[in-house]
Amino acid sequence: MSGIDKPGRRAVLQHAAAAIGVIGAAVSGCASVEVIIVEERAFVPPQRQKKSLALYKDWPNKGDQCGRCTRYVAPGDCRAVVGPVSAHGWCQNFRAVA
Ligand code: SF4
Image 1 (cartoon, protein in one colour):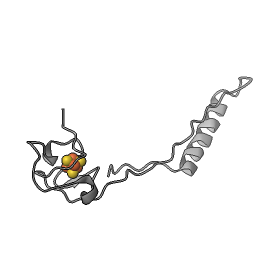
Image 2: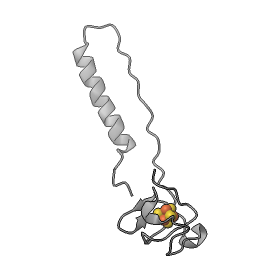
Image 3: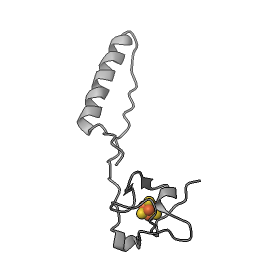
């Protein structure tokens, strides 16, 4: 997983309210203040396939292997398939590192 925590809706709204207060204090002499609140998008964790559905095998396929795939997470995990996976394995989700 990415390890990056996204702020919850409450935290975003609290920060927005605080920002509005700061802006309001800074421009108290102005007639109006425009506030734009960008809607927070719901975080949907990526779904990973079972090895059997991905046709995973523990050996390379014509030179293609997990260690050269964009979805491989060293030392033995994968963003697309439920691990562990081998650096020398392969599945139908293989995407070569450029
Ligand atoms: S080849 Fe398949 S199992 Fe291996 S890293 Fe890429 S997506 Fe994951």
